Length: 409
Image (cartoon, rainbow, N blue to C red):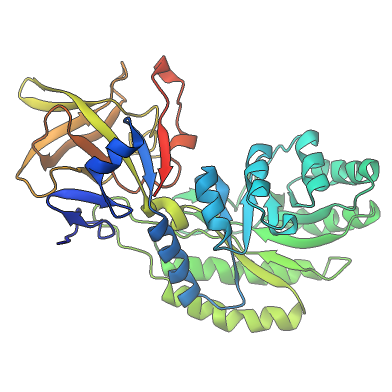
């Protein structure tokens, strides 16, 4: 079997006989196995290799957690539960998925603003660690713990006074709906103690989707300094410290993969100091997109080929209702094309085309004027970098088209 890269940003998926291979299966065969298009396919080998890559470059005593919001597909979460040290959830629904994996409840953390009392009660009853984000949540946990007769596992999520520079999405610094402002944290630690709660840890998350190792190193250093400062206000020794993540993946031309080595080297230097200052504390890093984003593809079938005033349009049976991010409507300021291919015509000559979906809106655009192999009705369009924020981050009910299938191969 011969292999070759399929895109400037794609070296993970081999090609044989002009057909993309996903999970070791030719794409045309996989489409037959799934039984319908469109679908998402996640390659478990690539997920496992990504975790192994991190383990090889990060300190051995640093825990690795998976942030389920990146992709909550149950089979994928189950696979990751056997590879990582903990699961991070952001809703009651994600909490159920995490608990179903058999992960020890105390290794499941529940963050996110606006948790309902019902969600908090479920988390306390399950024994998961709640990352409180407000005074209301702290008071609710005290009340719920008393009602249930269960001491809640509690950490405080902190909104730091800095942000992850160059990140695609800023989750900390300035005024944010996320977490407790760093300057308010000592007061909240005191309040928790007054209410009879033990704060077991801190969660400090400053940003996501960064491809700059130096920016992540700087943010992690600031995170550790802030954690050490706040630990002095805690009434009991901290057992956990979640320093967030922020590791990005390349999507667009000119972007290079994140270099993990310098991040691991600096953490290797920093962790002994943390352990000396906070004996017994377990430091964790929380990653979502970086673990699964490049391990997934979105596949749609060409249902029409049409030419409008000289421009070729490939109309597919999938679109923004399944993959909002690829359409450019999930945070892009200026729309850019995700890496796209004609999965069953990988080695053929190319032409400029636009790939659109079946929705009655000009926003339903998967590729705009890209150089792709000439495709006909029945061919398979592949959108790479689709393992994170795909189906679950898209408006599936928009225009009432059929839902999309997901498979783990």
